[in-house]
Amino acid sequence: MSVWEEHVTAALLGTQRKAAPKLEEVPLAEEDAAARLLDQAGLLAVQRRAGRRPGRAEAGRLVAPAPAETLPVVPAAAGRRLERLLGGDRPRLLPEWLGEAAARGYRVPARSLPDLLDKGRGDRAVRPLIARTAGQRGAWLALQNSDWAYLLTESAASVEAVADWAGGTRAQRVAYLTALRLNDPGAAREKLLESWSRETAPDRAAFLAVFEHGLSEADEEFLERSLDDRGKDVRQHAADLLARLPRSAYARRMAGRAQRLLRLEKRTVRSRRRTRIVVELPEEHDDAMARDGIPFHPPGSFSPSAARTGVRAAWLREILARTPLDSWTESSGLTSGELVALPVADDLAHDVHLGWARAALRQRAADWARSLLGDGALVEEAEAPAGLLELLPEDERDAAAAELVRAAEDQAHLLRLLSRLPSPWTGPLAEAVLALLESVLPDADATRFVSQLCRLADERLTPAAAPRLLSLAELHGKWPLVELAETLRFRHDMLQELAESP
Image (cartoon, rainbow, N blue to C red):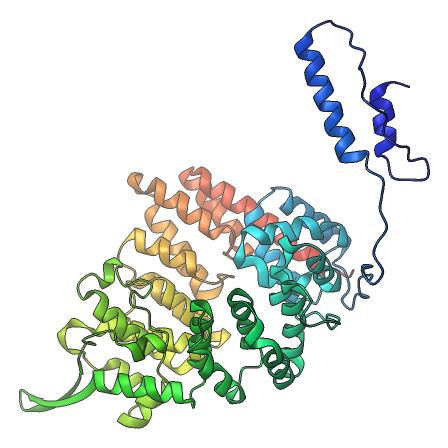
């Protein structure tokens, strides 16, 4: 047996495993000293990786088997399609595949879990979908591999309690705390309080993030104390969570600040009584604002749309975003639609409406979302309207999104907006996108725009649009249309496979 064969045999797992041979000398066909050195180094690497004898697990450290699965696995054809997606065939369609599988109550095949969990390491957006389809084995694997620990904060899968709360790994404890918050939020809070003062700042931040599950007024006292924590991330998590409690002391403080900055002014214009919103921007960023989680440089404070008013307008938006929306309707006696329709002095309507939009997203306020979308003041934005659309009832979304598409003034904004519109694009929204395509196809200067639009549509547009796109491709000879139609057919088959019986 050759030296190489002896090392391969030593590396194999099984009853015939052998100890690795010593590397005193390796016979070579040539006398080249450099080649001899490289071969020696290669064989030594194999020996170090594979020639190690297995050890024994310490008592009490044996890995428990994965819990039994409760969800059925996807149909076989759908499982093969998943392998194609993970292997690089139209990988951008993976979120849709996972979303459809989750909606149908399926889990992914066990053989695909490692590749899928690796995908989630680099793509945060797909993590919630992975958590919904990874099953019990996915959560079990995440406990064994810290690279996949993100799944534990996303997954509602049951996890065994950590025998030693103080001695468990962060991933184990986050998993346990998440499961406990989902079932008994109060017990989870009390468990955390037992060791809170002894935890490190990164651990405290990770544990506090779990409180979004089962958040209620019962958490207020603990979160309020956490505003004074030494850890910056802990303080920010606490402030963000308190902003979701509309009857908390934190919400009252924010409402007080907001009411001092915005007021209704009645005046006579051409013999008619008019009402407008007058804004007074915050003068300074004081310690109380800092304690309540309003950053000195809020995200987006230097974006192009905020350039005219700078950081003071950014503070205003942050305060409005954290103020209960009910405080405006209760204090003014007006509806959300009436408030949004009021003119705003000093050209600050965009800032006021953007702050309200962020509050609507945080508070899941569908009535405010409807009013803000209908007013059109946020048409130059892209991210906020897309989020507001998701708050609307399903039967309203497509029509509202179609109006946004038709109101967009330039191609760059259209692409930003469409990139954030949730899928699937059906009904009026699909019609608006197809009409947009038809209108720009004759323009020789719009080739790049058509290509980018087709790339966005391939993972969002309803597959039922494929025949119409093929007709457009025959008429205009545009290759992106053909590629788009083929991708829509791929998606049609993908969805059909998931609709089959397992």
